[in-house]
Length: 349
View (cartoon, rainbow, N blue to C red):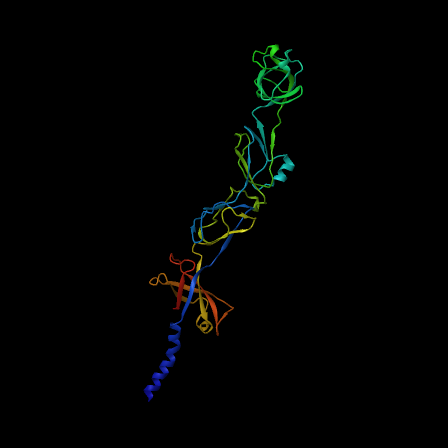
């Protein structure tokens, strides 16, 4: 009889210990830190170079956002550049009159009339686009060439394409032939400098490619503009880059879609920023404390258990039938196995 009592007492003493050893929790791997990349300005999204689940290296381009390009309208030389990335175009243009200025290869224009032209009637009929020869009335050795750019009645304008030794403000005669004979003269005029061309735009400067003193050709890209103020007045190149190595969790836009400034584009978690979240019955909480060690086994790798540490126990439970369950968050040791969404189990050590 005494032996039976001793056995019963031993069983009662061992039961809690056995129950604790058998504590097993079910859960899954989640991202411990999640970040959202926002559109730096309004624009149309280009092709997206990644999808949810991809592991992305730091600095990798994820997508582009459209910009408004500013091109050179003619061949020439960039002179004053007053804007820089991040600037408001309106502010710069209010102060300087332009984002930058360009000077044409042709330095002079001549305002002319048929006064003094040769007696032949043809000399009094000037045509736009004519190639002409220009000679100073003060020094006949100073000569150049040009093209008629506009005609109005007896007046016309010549753009001097080859200024030679001609000087600004001097009087000139215009000829149809390089022999400079009076019968080929089609009029007289005076030279003036062609003013630099102001290059203007609207919005904010994302990138400024033109440099003072640089020679550019018609169609060269001078600047890119965006409609919204840029954070920190920092420019860019129209691409959205991965700020750190991580895993994309969600792509929230698509190529060709217009997005507004600060609209969410993508969410990601940094590499290694993973944890396991398990569900514990309220009766199991007495066996769990923050800092407890757990053995975590991923369903995908049953033979490669991981060590984990309880980092948080939810202060609010959720009803599940007649029971209340609580989330238990477990920090995992460094590993190359866990991925967001993996199923896992945990046992008390």
